Image (cartoon, rainbow, N blue to C red; front, side, top):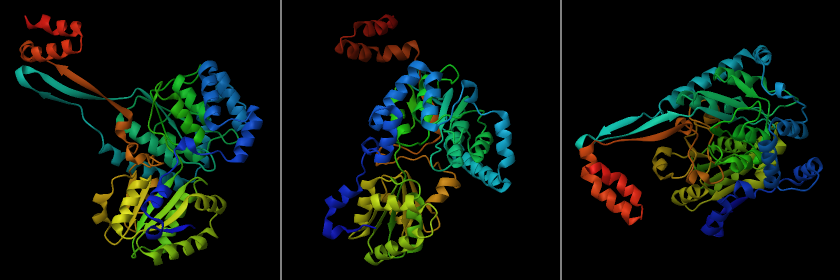
Length: 445
């Protein structure tokens, strides 16, 4: 585990270490690149590969979806096979552990209640001379949510994507999940059914994103696509943006822990590993003003890694993106944390609420030793679809408003319009737009 002392390295070097590469700058693993070369017949970057898939799905519809699903996921489907059937839902229900289902239902209710509090309201206000201004909050008609498959199944992501859309009042939600051996994890299906999703397609990757963005013969076009995925999914979302809206461009998982001398090294190491086990590209960082804690955390990491089932993935993540920074004081530690703008920020300090006002850039903040990151991933209620790669500087957590749009409402009476007509005419003529001015001038009489 790399430990860096800010006093010795200097602030600029620490800031450089904490500044993450953009998601589209991540180099593909050589093994993945070689596998893609064999599949596609030539060496391509991730962006080139995604561009080809999106173009083909846009032009060829179901045919291209079938082709890429067979090529990449090694599953041969016909269009009739895309949708999860009622029999598959029932089989998932029969296979699922009732205790796990009960926990999923509790989590879903917590998420629903939290997002219910976020729901904005339409409004109108009266102004001078009988004029009315307002704003209508309108849910989207149809959205598509993407739930990753990859090395693990994520029923929690179903809940986190679907529940705010349900609360927002979206008319139709469709879901895309990559198949594993032609099937979808039963808990993913149970979570989807609990959230009220009726259309689930066994399609993953860039082809799923393109299908939702442009529509195919059997897959409806959506208004917005949400949900995390791998580099190919993220690049596909970037490629189709503008034809359809998206939530954000997300990269690998991240955690940054601010810790002082009171932090428990066992908890701190465990929380670092909770993100490291996701992906070799995941980032786990501790910033502390206590050099002794830094050493204890590094030792504890080795101890916990030794018995971790996903040790190989977590070790690769720590080797590549693990970091412990020793700051001169907590003021500097907070500065470094804001530079990083992490997906998840934990405050493992004696008085975490005293530091909260100084946190400017984070997807979610977890305060105190008994608010670990997995609490937010699964159960507390706030959404776990969060900005990564430093984009918490300008992106927000997935929320109810993600699935709504705002429409302005304007109503003036003739006297109200006459009162402001000179100003409007003057501004329109300044811009050389005489027809705009005439539309106002004619109404003065």
